[in-house]
Length: 457
Image (cartoon, rainbow, N blue to C red; front, side, top):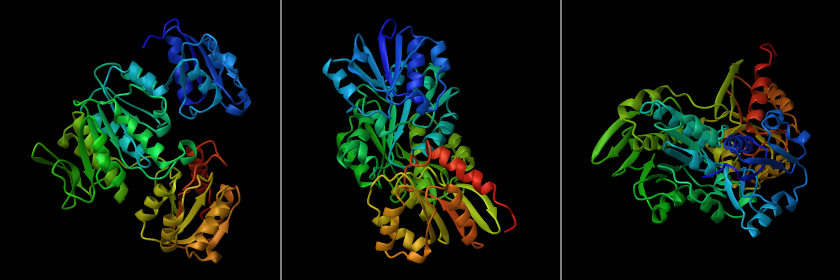
């Protein structure tokens, strides 16, 4: 992609927007970064961009911002339906995502992973597995590091592990990973996409531009992903926790294995796997299959699989106090992810849930809450709806506690009622934006509060 000399408008002042603006300026483009929020509301330091000579436009976005613009790079948080982008389309101005920019800049193959749940754990593990085969490996995308920055840093001769969200796929046209994977598709982000059909279509864009020489890894156990083979233009391999496969990654007699070209390669046993829980067996199978197709060996991957302990904010052990264990699962921003967390434990759970409500059906989640959870502590915007759903599905109303918009109060309640051998689990099943700037901030606040609890009651 030719950037030099072009007039480029970057929309959305997040991690992706910052990176896109700086990279475009590095390639001698005339760059403006625009965001509909005020500078004060964005809570970022824009001094570096000003020093680089990047124009900044905050607040109300007008059509005049499009005058003379050759290219728009849009951040994933910005939907294509906003008026400014509709007008840009009407003017035939090219609109791309930061992920598309990264692909155009990349000189090493990209292994891209998407799905409703498990992306961050899988991609983090994938990066480590790829390091067993490549000297230069980058990890980026929807994982907190802009993919375009990673692509430039890795350069040629390496490999890139990319976490890709449905938002990032909206404005892509040519994005073509060497290996892609879709872990699962369950209801999420329906406010943005409007329907499950559109949401799934965004996920499927990850493999839409692949060729017969590329690879796609799909979850055989997920009905929605299993059927994607019919639309894949590339070679497809499955992973499965439940079924032995003719080819792919699966569990055989308690062992994680890969079967390729008629040969079965042992990875490690479920007991040896560093990350625990059925969902993490799936994540490990997916990451291993992608890495194997990208050039890693089963022998080389074995040690990584046994030593990798997981990622921050995903069923993360915080501490034990008076026989009570505290876990941070702030990354559970939807009910399916929270269900997986509840299934990891045998019960005796004090659950802190709620937050910025995504409006998804709560029946399956609350049915499991009824059987697994001793006490339910609710926070944020979703508290009233979560309480009503819990009662409707048979949860004892006397065991529901409301903490308002205070994580501190939620932790205090948990401390007051928890008994030895119980587990306090933050697994919100909601986004965090009613109380925090992101699930990371929520999780770290929870950990701060838990670590601040006194040893003596």
